[in-house]
Image (cartoon, rainbow over all chains, first blue to last red):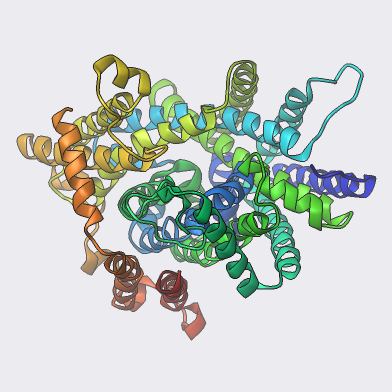
Length: 532
Length: 77
């Protein structure tokens, strides 16, 4: 495990203090709900695009992607390449302009204009539950990773044995302070710093690592040598060389067969994430113009092409240098410990903290936005003015943070080995159906409110049923073999949930009364009109 | 075995018949098709409104660049 000197800790503390100070400074300029939730619609494209990338890459992603690359190979890079770039380009030119022009605060709000309050509420509740819980999960998972991967430990005193709790509370306090003060603007500005530190820190690991193994060619050669050596001693298909391949066969032992990557990730989960995830889309709603909202997504897509190189390739370097690690997730920290000099290690620790904070702050702010706009303003106080919305927004941020701390501490007390994966799976439950609703709403004039609601709920029921039928205990009880033959088949859940939702939307829409033309005017994409 | 298992097994065995070379073509075709779509977008959808647009301000250029990188990645990867 890495050992840190006082210089490393100084770098981290200076970085954290700077981030909080910037967030607080921005908070002084916030005077309305619109400022708080949409940064007054004054954000420029490069801020938003960089923030999109920072939000998407969490602290657990850096360690997790490095670990997955160590264990399964470069195919995990698909999540940042085909799993991001095409969807971001389509979002930029087709969907984001619609949302920006509508002047809405949230995607569920747009869905009420297109469909009805039921669709808005169902979407808002799903996103709220997911995001509020996910903040707690991210706080806990990252605190645990901080402690275990970086070997942070108190040898005595009151805090000994409470390292995870302390890390969780400190992170929550730091993120909470600037998110509470500055809202979306603080989140986006600090994200830019965090993204820069994150890319810089990971880039150093990549460069030092490549120098140490002798360059890219030598890295590939040595990866293949290790795989061939393993293949010679293992007869199973799992020993087949796969670490340098991006596209894996259907019968791969890894969770990334090409079918799941292309159909589940590339065509469904990725567009659902970049077009329908409130935490992602919200910053583009705060753009100062429609053009800047589009440009932000294009800039984000360009940056995304770089990400696998700096977080997945180090996993391969670790595979070459330390092929016998007990846990794949230790690949990145072990590399950091063995290669980086004092001070630079601290910068990587800051990069990890940056990645963690940039995701937590975004989900916290977006959950508060949904709670305030889609529930409070919609159902409790429709006449609330901007100052009141600001107060409620800040109160809900505090409430959500307390909930997230409680939830994070709760799951730290129970068996938690698979909780992070379970929550990734939960997101797959409703992202496919939510994407079907979005697509139908924007591209198909005949889609109706009842169709959208039935399709959304039916899609969720499908993914939950598939998940249940794939559980070992259920299969044993029913004397069945599992439905899916890959590990963690959440990408497949999303495919089937999307398809069922789409069919239900079509059938129920055709059976129900069409939406009046005046209601949906300007809400349906028509290439000739909307792209010009 | 339920009908879902039979459907799943049939799909899996059918998809396994597709050669990996063809699969690679699919992965490359996705960004290529998007490049063609982006190039056909009206200029007004990709440039800032109301000003004389310089070449580097046209979002087509940067969107195509992002997608070309994808083509290279999946053609070589």
